[in-house]
Length: 286
Image 1 (tube, one colour):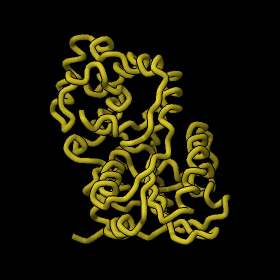
Image 2: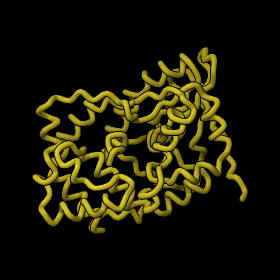
Image 3: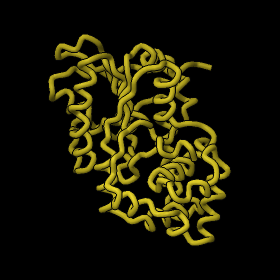
């Protein structure tokens, strides 16, 4: 579980993309408005295994040629939570799980790269745990392999020695989360997922298959969306993206849902005067 803190992604904002016939690339070049270098906006799938990314050499080349990376969250994302809120959202695990539930969850994590939850009983991050369970249930390979988001982040920061930056303010995310659910609610959801009760991820199979094979999606750029949280999150990200792309070439990797609709980052950046052009991607033939 040593990497759980790095996987803090907001389940309550997790985008579920529906594929349709009008598909577009999920990789877009950002230019214009006086930019000295091109940047790139990439719509990821949070449960797609990273090996599939190797089938698109053009993306890897672009990642290598950019100066820095921008992600929803990063391992170094600053978290300065109010101590009362932090304790409220992350009580000791043995206080929110029954004895039977605790063993179920511990057995699940012990079989993954994260290991037993017992050493982290008093300092575990419930939201990160829930996200890990969700991704592993949606894609069993995730238990052994990294997903797109995490691999790109790790590749850029560790292998290429490039700087990476977060878009999200985790303090605000925790504040929203505390208003939406309770630690016990997250604990029950986690156990239900592990036991295949409720959401099992099967509804995503078609979506993931389409995404992996083509790296295309129906982004519905001219359609209206009433997703208030998605809109607010994109608006908060916009000035951070502008700041980074003005100072150098940036590879921006966020969930594909953040590219969709009129409220998405593609249209928001266009409204600010930037030119966004879809990048054609070709899958490598084996």
